[in-house]
Length: 493
Ligand code: SIN
Image 1 (cartoon, protein in one colour):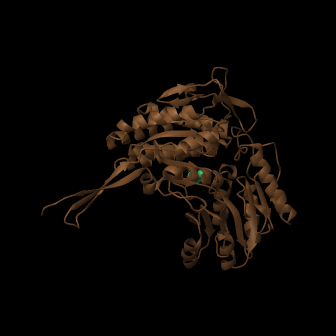
Image 2 (image 1 turned 60 degrees about the vertical axis):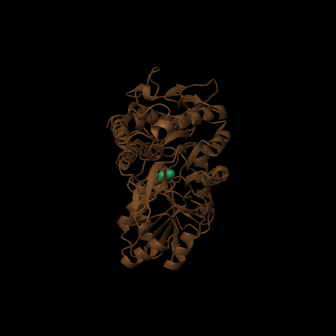
Image 3 (image 1 turned 45 degrees about the vertical axis):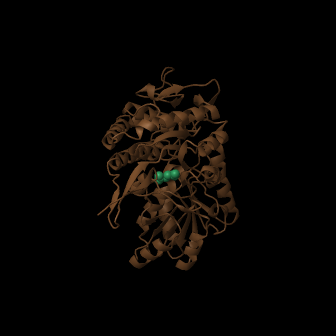
């Protein structure tokens, strides 16, 4: 198998086929903006610097907002077919540059090459879906009164889009694509950990023909709090979409409430996964692997609390351990690596803390368990985990599967719902009555019944409780960027 490590040179330090996709600048009004003050971006596999980006402050973000606001005055009137054409072109540009986009993801996020390639395809699927949505935003005529009433849909305005580091192209795609589809403009605040894939995506937005000023990117690190405050309080911003922690989501929601902006919040998960006694074990194993270990466990929808019925506990644990032992942790570009490093040392330390806490309360390591470097951990399976250990109340956000025993459906549903967050939940059962019953009782926004894979551009993604509100993807993902306006037309008939 050929090595996946890019062929780097001083002129092309990330070894891209198209080195112009490596942009170390913010993008405002279609132009690359640099500043004397910069921050460094690291490769999580080595801790080595891979580049810098301008550390922008409040004045810069105001310029970006003013630019997006002025671009909105004309972009809002772009014909839907034109917006669809932009997105269709963007979709093909993403596919044509898929290797470079995947390289950027591995360089700055660390995820393993197969995961990065899958993420690029996932991002492209959102762009493709919203290209279709661009021409489907019809209103309604209500004829039940003497007057004739119409409901028309209009773009909401300038959107502040705050994207996370765990899907460096997936999350910007599912926020920017509906903004473009509906005629909105945007200021995107990209994470300091993974700015380059986001910047390359916006470069492709411009290559697809979208006018400068419609999508602007602000890179920041030291001024993060002030930039976040400006984006959520500036009166020219109509909508805020944020993916990240519940703690930060609450701060942003408080700030946005001062001007009553429309908000979409996709926050923390702590997903329960339940293997009932009537589950098909191979299906449950595959579903658990898919949900738990995607992106080295760094997704909001990763299973975090895995409850297994006592009668199938040993069989499930043995079958899962066999698979987990086949995983290979290493640098994302290394051949055969299935799981890359975590984003920071602190992220890896948290997983170790969860392992140590569970072991101190009687858990046993059945696979993995070793810390290979500051950021790299072996995918790990713990058994005999106590139901009150740290990982049941805190999202691990790492490659740790911890199996907790249960005896009855009532007991496990009580445990599963005993969380202040509710993004995703999974369960495995072959009993049709139970499937409906449990799916309805789980207090989450998304349920995987006999599957660990729920995410798709075609369906609404979002949570309940302190996992936030609003949906991304599906028809609902378009509605988030639109306002419905009633027009009542007087009639003398
Ligand atoms: C996330 O972790 O924030 C998104 C996961 C997904 O889209 O499946």
